[in-house]
Image (cartoon, rainbow, N blue to C red):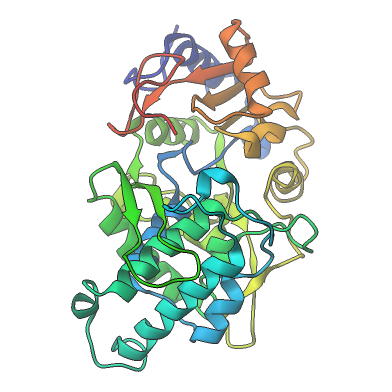
Amino acid sequence: MKTYIKRLNWEESLYTSINKLIGKYGKDNKAYNPAKKPFAVFDWDNTSIIGDVEEALLYYMVRNVSFKMNPEEFYDLIRKNVDKKDYPKEFNNIANQRVNIDLISQDIKRAYEKLYENLDTFEGEKGLEEVQGTDYYQEFVSKMLYRYRASSFDKNAEDPYCWMSFLLKNYKTEEVYNLCEKAYASMTKEKIRVEEFISPEIKSAAGRISIKYFVGIRSLDEMVDLYQSLEENGIDCYIVSASFIDIVRAFATDPSNNYKMKGEKVLGLRLMKDDEGKILPKFDKDFPISIREGKVQTINKLIKNDRNYGPIMVGGDSDGDFAMLKEFDQTDVSLIIHRANSGLIDDLRQKARNGSLRYYSQGRNLLEASFIPSKKSEGYNE
């Protein structure tokens, strides 16, 4: 068997299947037609990389208070499209009391107002280092990350909720790229870890809370090599993400992280912009909303075009990828990154465990930021 990808830490049966796939559909196939290139599609977060670009950006933005909103705008946005019911019991505060968005948003607003008054990036005169030891800074950081983990979107809202992207309100595209460049440079240097945040002992509406948050982001050698090998062998490689398109493109096209993808092959959520080019917290309905079944719609509308066939390979890690992993009859290999998450994806994982010739499971060690040559992940596996 001719090999096209490096052995690295691929699971054995998946490694074999990928090499056969490239041989079957790539330039070595005598029937290969460069006018109708075959293509493959992959999720980005926790599939193409270790970690999640939006979660990494959120961590960076919160820690550095990198927002372009006044307190009233900020308060409105953190409450936008949120389910108003009490959070599940696992998000009770330290005193074991129930919490909800009304309580937590009051505390976040109060802390943000203090930051807005004091930071020199807003209306104050103090640098970030001067406020990092304050109660209001620690309150803001811990409760913002808690709010992200605890809140669910209102199922009766007009749009699916995508809060992290909305936090870029008032940013322009170039500013998003500059912010992401700084954030990713910082986050790739962070030790991969799960960090616990505990709010300070101050009077507050929600009380003291504790939340754990995954920190860090890394490239995956196997996925970098796979994408380059597909392209070198005449197979177009696309990303379809549920994250905001500018955030994903900023990482995927950054020459410093090896992926070096073309921007037009990286697709994701699109947000509206005002007449000045500033981001608005609402989806651009001219494009499919690339969440769950919307990923299939994105492939059909923006990738397939006149090809009249589906992707030969699809990769994902969660229920958000379930539809595109199973939708297309033309898909020879569906790659599933093994994680501890559950849902519809469990059905496909079971097929992979049973020796499916289409569905394959790839293990990883999250805290070591690497694949392992196994169908199952090991160590911490969020």
